Image (cartoon, rainbow, N blue to C red):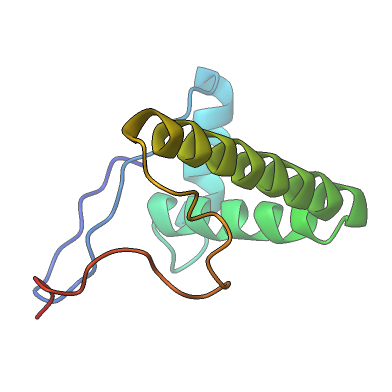
Length: 107
């Protein structure tokens, strides 16, 4: 899985390396050689299938949502603490979907 993207216009990829036993690597190479896939493409397909399987579990989705809510809560608390330190008013009551940032420098 160490192949680099080729061709122009291909989206930039991140490298993920896994360690397997030499015998399993040999088995992977043998199986991949029977297909029209590269080892990299077969690995990506396998990982995508695994992620889809994991995310189909309701308890995993619930855990992900709980983690997201905890992160949002921590961010609100941090924002309130910084606002209090800077002497500003609490902007955590800003309506959802709006921003408190200035748009002056946006293009």
